[in-house]
Length: 315
Image (tube, rainbow, N blue to C red; front, side):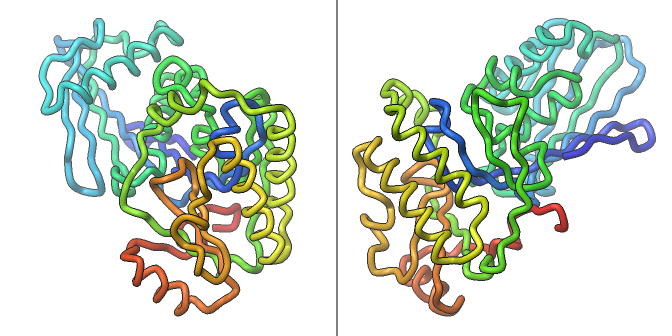
């Protein structure tokens, strides 16, 4: 994550995220182990003298513009847009940012904002959390407070947005995030792949958070998150993944992804984040050719090596 000034422009950037352990239970106070990504989202702000107090916003995926809107900076009311639903959500975020910092965007200048996503917005890699982080940089506010007022969630994704290394995150200890230099020797045996169906995070949270886990489950998940961060061998790493999924499976009353769809895979496959969508992690002692052929046979073609996606202090 970073912010900077170039000419008359200000720019901010935040990292995407993937969750390895603690899914769902992180919402109830369990430690979770997560990694920031090399890909993320940038926000470029420019201002010019004008008699109109207007914010002109555009969102790009790479070089392709997919959303635009203009707002009155008096109250962030929508002047025009190509998507009222998205503009209404963005207006709500900007309004919340001003509640946290009443001086945010109160000058009479014309402001242009360009938000550039570095990955496919259909992928659940953190399009919302990186936006929250960047707007918080811009407004000089606490990103976790802005998250709580808008999308909600545990906040591990916002922690990743501003981290340059893997981390252990706890909802109740946002001020004492543990940063981990996680670059294991076995990482060439880890493949990250997209299943092709993004989960609605807010809906998942709503469906799950009504059922609290017991203290033993929270303690077990926290222990696993701390252990997996120190993994020195692939076998130990896989055993931690299996242990995590066994507990989450018991909590959700759902079979693990590996048992349901990939039981013949040599190694282990788990969801990274919400079960049933987004990305999977395939960990195998076999060759990359074996993993590629296996995933190809399952129709899973979008995949990355660990080093292609994961950010580390020496990336």
